[in-house]
Amino acid sequence: MATVSFTTPCSCATAVSDQSGGTAIPSTHHGCGDHGGDTTGSFCYARGGASCGEAVASAAFPGAYRRACGSPTAAPPSRRRAVAIQSVEDAILQLLGGQAANVDVTKNPDDSFTATITLVDGADGTSVATYIEQELVAELAVEVGEAIQLTSEVVLSSGSMDAAVAKTLGAVAQQDPHLQLAHGGHADFRGCDGCLFNFLSARDLSLNVRTAASDFRLRDTLVHGTFMTEVHVASLFRPKQKWMNVSFWAAQVGVNNWGWRMVNGTCGGSPFTLGPMARKVCEQTHVHTNSSSVNISTPEWEIGIRVRQVFGRVSGPQHRLDVLMTPHGSEAQLSWLPHGIVGHSFDGDGLPRTGRLDDYSGAEVTTQAMAEGAIDGVAQDYRVNQPYDTEFRFSRFRGTMSSPVSVVSAPALTRSASASEQE
Image (cartoon, rainbow, N blue to C red):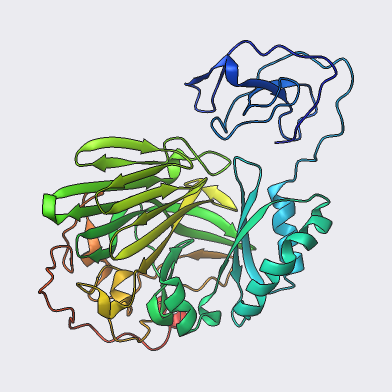
């Protein structure tokens, strides 16, 4: 938020409401400032200790709505130009010179940007990551004509991911949905409209996702696919038989990829709701939200969930969720090897599980892959009925410390299905 100085004091005595439309911000937190790149006048904002004439939105009330506050007697200094998301995306694609297959940029409540950069097959992930860390932000400022704050994450495509990188990243379910599995495996998974599937089942931990149908454009192709729109995590603290349930809802975020009610759940039966920059601890499960993501940490697993806008949307959800699942330590240190559509790739043998991929060539495509070859059984075996269900055919939730960690698994495919096999 840019700071605007006025030649005469202005009055902001009337309370304004936060972006959720409910909580009134006390007059002691008011000040006058501009609305990003808005040049139509001055407005009341929550302030964080600044004088009335030099106020910015405070972290305590990041979504404060503006209200008319009167005009300055003289024109304010030149204001920082609002930088469009599309401009940042285009600039990153140009600067990476064909190394990126896709760039998703979101704008955070503090006017900083977050970029998810998906590399093309064969891209040198290490070199790109080094360039992004050391040079991208400076060169981006030249391209868009304004210095910006940028947090970036590099997502490697199946063709650029090796076993070492996969081990570092854990396993990722992202986009529509593409699965980057442990040890360098990969598969695509369509799911079905409104259906819940278990993606990770471990001792005292279960993660279910809901998929929703979506039509969107991927460059020149119209895709009839799906996205993940809900993630539901159930964890159990056995000594007290105390449950923690946590849900992330893509439908609860707005145009800037955050919302006051994007995360909710229960701890020991007591409900809670989390917006950005909040924390919740329930025995050994820790939940921490950022502006557009949540991290859930248990004694054996780290789960990261982020929300992204659906680009090229034709119909269906406006936002989607991506999920990162990483064990603390090696698989040999887990009390029970996990299962689930994604979790089963952490099967302890160190080998990739590679399954069916969708073919996106053509003017119009309907995704069909259900991770065949990378999972035991079929996708229907992983269906659950309720968000926090822990039981399905391959559930590992009730594993005990004395249970054997090794399980018999179906052999993984060593190649991707051909386009003809997918029809």
